[in-house]
Figure 1 (cartoon, one colour):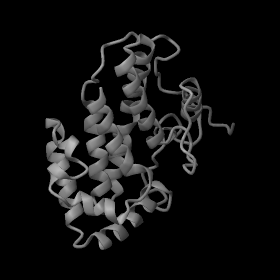
Figure 2 (cartoon, helix red, strand yellow):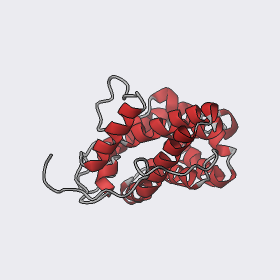
Figure 3 (cartoon, helix red, strand yellow):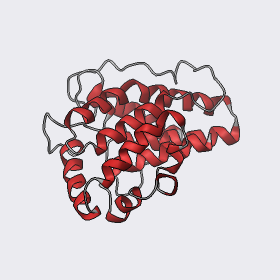
Length: 220
């Protein structure tokens, strides 16, 4: 569990805020010593990791790269791209596609049940990609220690939930990311989520089983 959780945390960090100069510089290092080293040890991800590092190096200078990636981040994830964006919210890919709908409510409830909340200064809806990934990371670590069937069921439910909408998010990144960097990162995430979970199987109780939401189009 911990290695998978570390891999989830690494990819989650690419989608929360624009990369800083030092972070992009680190990504241009040899893969085995850079921040994607753990991911490069997962056979299914090796080609995509190599491509992402190649894109990071292709900007010429890290300073130029940060400028381009900040622009791409705003266009893709903060709504500046309008219809040519990739909203990092589950609600955008489920039901009507309106934001702040049922998936956000489901995630808010799950966060309360796990006694967790987003870090201060991250004012995003509960169904933001980073929040869902962070909760998956934390519950993976917890289940690895406790081996409790309830914890394992929560992990499997979150994993299934992410697998339900991240492919559409990754496609949107691929369609609209002109740098290729976030498209590559989203493709990496999608492949990681396709890997089997490193925890024992558990039967999902009815209240945890994820089912695609049927959204009410009226404002709540």
